Image 1 (cartoon, rainbow, N blue to C red):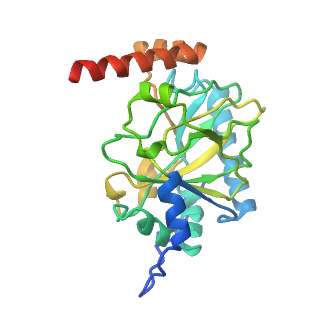
Image 2 (image 1 turned 180 degrees about the vertical axis):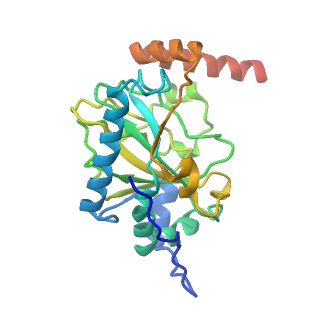
Length: 274
């Protein structure tokens, strides 16, 4: 997609409206919020089509990296400077004012990303994003209608307050909830909310944009300047080296066995450190 020349702006008001108390309580209790209709659905549909077209082009000509999520079917992506209009919509609808009220550490501009759930993907293992000792805020934007069929995220309710020990999840069995969204809706969540990507049983990739505030936010004047502003697909949770590719194949083929392995490893790690 072509880069746009619009400056990156964040709406500021002399006295920002305080966040609604009920909204703040819900976020604190559940670790996430959904807000419908933030981004124009027609505009984001065009962006989604461009992302999928570029993925298909790279796949067709054998230009994608090996491993790195291509086996499990979950890729990362930089959506390019052509997605700048999504940031502007977040600013115009007051979401960028809401973010630091929900999470005061979110002091800068967000990092810009996207995840793409490919047709035939496997279920991921439960995980948190980033370093659990340093939580941050994430705003996901649905680029297409996100349903059970195409792999809507599964969250583990209330786990943003957990101790981040994998084995405890198997013992406590927190409530699991699928988060379905319509294109243009947003999901605001904490990085420490346990979740997992689910199988995409549709025929089309399912992109989901992500605005993240690791370490307070991006250090760049313009977060859209990375990759020279061009759309780029990137490895997800797995590397592209030989060992990582073998591990990805094993986890994709037997996710429940992977869950058991992670639980045992986290329990043994606890005993070793105690």
